[in-house]
Image (cartoon, rainbow over all chains, first blue to last red; front, side, top):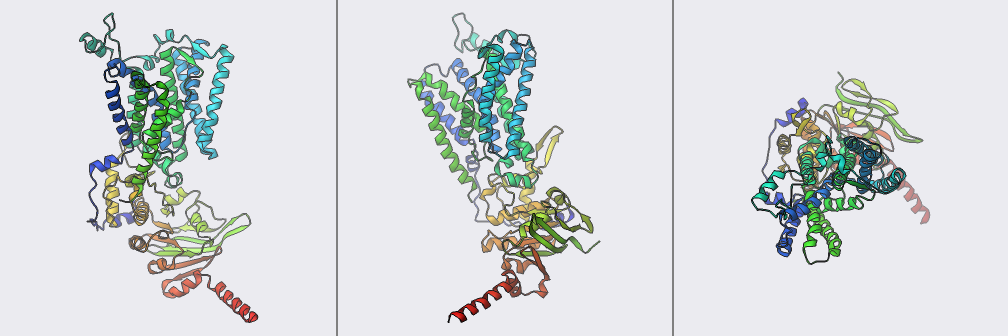
Length: 375
Length: 263
């Protein structure tokens, strides 16, 4: 701070404007981007509570089921949300999932690499592809929608071609046996809190199998990753200077550049983020299924973006939250699983999904107007 | 040291065959408001960009506090204390007052590698700074989009001053504002100058420039029509220069001639 600015600060003439009302805590809360998704989640739970309350959907097993689906989607939705706040899209998320899957499976099965090395390899490829996406968008100035749409085709095609070339088929099974004794794989493949479920089972508090062991054996790894992702992303967005740069880059690229925000670097790092999140998604799914499939992750990019939008992200960037995206994913996961417990034909799921998105976008648009208009 | 904080001597800038600026000279003292006036296309934007380090001048020299300087980038200019507040203000409407105030220069706390944005401190400084110019921001975490145009302009200026500006270049700060808002902003500019800043105020509005300016430089088609102090220049004369007085006189003569021939 220069001397001159200090001398300015010495004069005080703070005038309270009596025309202004105090803004209540409630109103502050109403302006948060995740509000819509939070409300939506509550509505969805009330709905299924009434319609499917007695069907086992809300038993420990049923809940873990829809939490697992939500958590998987949530991992990529949060990364997609951060990228959207930064003002860009990544349509290659789904293809990246498929690509990461074979990056793990082929070296591990066909080249004899240890599983951990294959996972590191897949993560390294993700960083590379994310960086490539980012640098293309930043350097060419083309819309990321187009650049990553191209990458969607390139990655999916390459995944199919490479897998067929090396293995002669489109699936690579046989991973399950490799998980044991691997120093890294367990972090993507271990159920946690087993003791809790065993105890709950022994107390007959949760459903048991005929042999007396509990039906639900532990929290799936996806849920732990999902929670960790939500906390980490929220911390970044709200509590770090990098988070401020993300909002600034998406809110006004030129303005942010003028005040010294490294917009290009921020965007590239966010593209790396979505690619790495896709790879973590792939690790969890591939190790859970024990096999990689070239078609894995198809259309996941759209679900991730949909969850982010339901969670309050604006398509134009600069606004949104990780918690919102997490609730968006929870809504999708709950409905996609919950619909099996109701009498509703599952064919209607996508209708619901689309309607939900439309409502969310209309609501968000309204909120944005609210936020930017003078009070 | 020279009596001027910053001098721009005989600046020329060419874009291919187009002469955007030719031999423009401007000097600003500490505590002085120098108004740069010109019609659309006079070269104001090019001059601002040259002053703020976006363009390099093809001819001429920039002297900051007696030292000959070359700006390679806007950051160089900023490091020398020359801050530019552009028309778009570099404010993000969806972000909070605090987050905008510290955008790109966030105060941090905590351990190395685990530093967090010190939002409490930032909130306090932002609210305090805005309070000093008589703007009660109510809640520094409210979005900038909720503020009026004048308040936004003051926020952008106040931010530049907080981060150590010595020379403040203001690009059309009042052009989008109503009369009342404009007067609030102009009052703040005068106050900033009285505290020792040098201000270059770019505008095409003589009515806004004349009351606050100490000296006036008029640009016309890339050339300076000269710098005048307030004592030597009446508002009418300035208006005439701005409106391209000579050309209008010529037009008047031509029209008379046409009328005479027609009748």
